[in-house]
Image 1 (tube, rainbow, N blue to C red):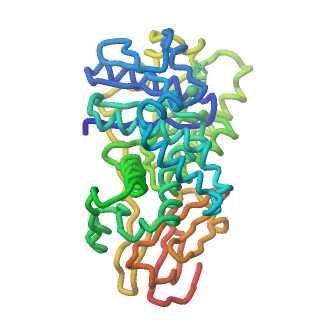
Image 2 (cartoon, protein in one colour):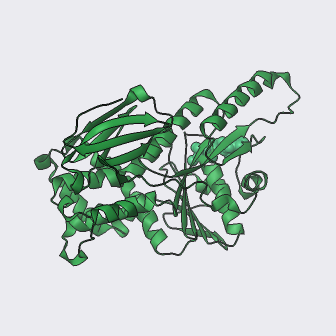
Image 3 (cartoon, rainbow, N blue to C red):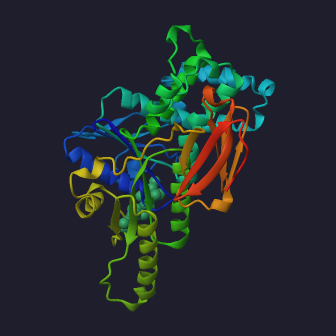
Length: 394
Ligand SMILES: Nc1ncnc2c1ncn2[C@@H]1O[C@H](COP(=O)(O)OP(=O)(O)O)[C@@H](O)[C@H]1O
Ligand SMILES: [Mg+2]
């Protein structure tokens, strides 16, 4: 598939920028027009490539462009109209009780995503490689379109037009029609734009999320949580990169214990991420600065032609018709069954695990249904809906 978006995420300092940069070099070397873009406010692409970057896209070799996004500039130059809708929306926050949404901070980040979507839609690049801010910020960045459209749907009578885009299966079941664009006001346009963005980020054919990690306790723990949350939000994680692996043949007993510990966490990662392609990156003796050093990752790890193909494509979450009503399956691999809370509001189901919560809007046809049971099995939460419905949580 051409026109891919590959997003790298992971804890701070694990090597996201280095790994993203290596992919960009590899991609360009295949003659694919490639953009390496950073959404991390602490940009360092310029440092890695040893060039000075401004606020614009910069071409650095035949098929490679670099871009450190400045959301403020993007907001003013590319999306002034959207900014206008959003400001209008936020200025009504007291009326709608939005004060604790923290919408303004997240909104800046939204413009990075809108810009990426715009660049994707322009079809200028075969591959857009995204170097993200550390984990927590990446999730809030990626979930923001869904969250904002969720609030908009609550606040304005847009849910009624039924634009919520479901998987093709659900579309058939619920017979959702996209309304005539001209009939919609600004808010509805904004809503649609957010839905399109969400759709793009969750489109398995186009967007991949790849996690970079290192074999050490705290990082591995965060990596597992990150994977769980990305799945809870229905993003397609299709690759894992274990970075900074010590060479086994170090002739120095100082490293013995360290090697053992690394081995333990590598094994643990392999077990947890058995379903994903895993790539292992050696610990180099020097910092990865300059294309020559980054090329080492390309040579050692990014071999083969399939680096940019989607590693695994899992089915999108959708509502399935069953004998008693409907079934919704949500993947939350690695979640603790006792730490999953599920409740149903008037218009959506809410799933909470750890400190992350997701609201999944119910299609109109399900509004007369109630959650009749839920079961967490093999990393998947199966939520059953029945007419009326008695609770039988397991
Ligand atoms: N495999 C490696 N071997 C040696 N140094 C590395 C390796 N991976 C990353 N580094 C160095 O570690 C630092 C952090 O890497 P970086 O890619 O900027 O991480 P992140 O983007 O996740 O914060 C950089 O100085 C980088 O050159
Ligand atoms: Mg970085």
